[in-house]
Amino acid sequence: MRIVDTIPHERFKIQIFSYNGKYTVKIELGQFEQSYKIGELDVMGLEDVKAMVTQEFLSNCLKRFVDMRSDWNESFKNKNTNITN
Image (tube, rainbow, N blue to C red; front, side, top):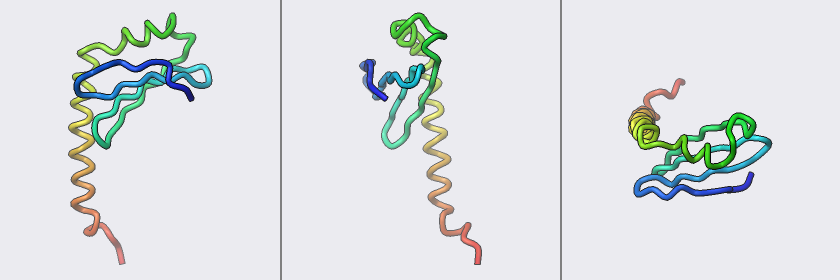
């Protein structure tokens, strides 16, 4: 997998990869990440992929990151209460 581009952003680390006939958009925030794959034949190139990363899309990603953190914190809090004997 190789990085083909990055999208500058003040909050997220956004990288676009190319591998095995697919583009992967990876968005990172702290210890969490989200990845989205699309076939290279489904878009007209890298610029199409970059155009899909809109402000609305990133706002929804932020909501998912908040949910991910909440889920992870809850799992961490309960890690010792779920041990069976």
